[in-house]
Image (cartoon, rainbow, N blue to C red):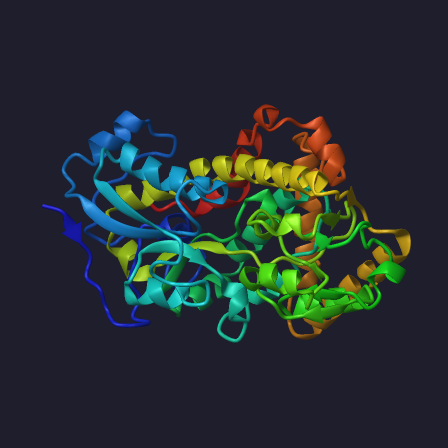
Length: 425
């Protein structure tokens, strides 16, 4: 018999498989997602083999869950989530039966939280940054996402320090739980998501204040809007799905979107890329989330498997992100573009704007000092592991073949320092 979990009405908390790791995270709050229900059965130790996991699932009826993955089947930006979901089926010997739906077939970016809460789907990316009025606490981190080094490996720093902050304060998790979701992994680890170039049309990059002055730049969110204004450009609120047409019409000159957005085909129109290794733009980062009720109904061993196999998600996302950045850079060069850092005057202007944004966030109650301390600590860890967080983009790609980059040391550090404390037990 296959178990299909009950669906409740909107916002009544439907739990999904994705709640896995984040469920563990809620151990910090009054309602701990890392605590399985009383009749959840026995679990396995961290580090258990596939054979041990499959044996633990032997007496469990199949559990059907629906996962939505962005983009079309086979899209490079999907590979981490697909690999993760498939690993759950393999390690459970098919007992976690996960149906993967591609694109926005069930819900769009601004509706994914509702769809997770009302049971239309169980596992998906949730774009908390799209609804700052509903998720103001979590958006403190989004608004500070520029903290840390700007180089490509700075994404590893950002993923780690933001994940650490979320797990250190129950308020982040409780805010999401109140909307019927559980954060599985709070911060997206794909390098292409956190790297935000200023990508422009034309024959030359707009890397200094003079060339940026008057340029109309697509930028979403209060943080990125303020940063674009500080650089002397004029921000325009255009979502990345609408930017291709806007760029073709000439209604915008540039975009301040992630490498993932450029990977969708924008590079052929805006091949001139500016990415600074020292100072970075903000990013709107999705979190892997699940419906809350499903998580709480899962057997302990299922919760543990979903948590433990986040290593597959992290490893695949990290390497796929490098490939996406590499392909974007190659496409830009093929279309006559270059990749350069900010000129000194623009870098100074952006740094000053970032300092002002942090002061404003501190005035609104954000613990900015702890953000900076965590980012500094993880910068040291990432550098000690050999990922070179201070390299500029071109230097990093020149020095590191994707196949030679081993994400496992970073994953081990993230588990040991942050995640394992919240493993379901």
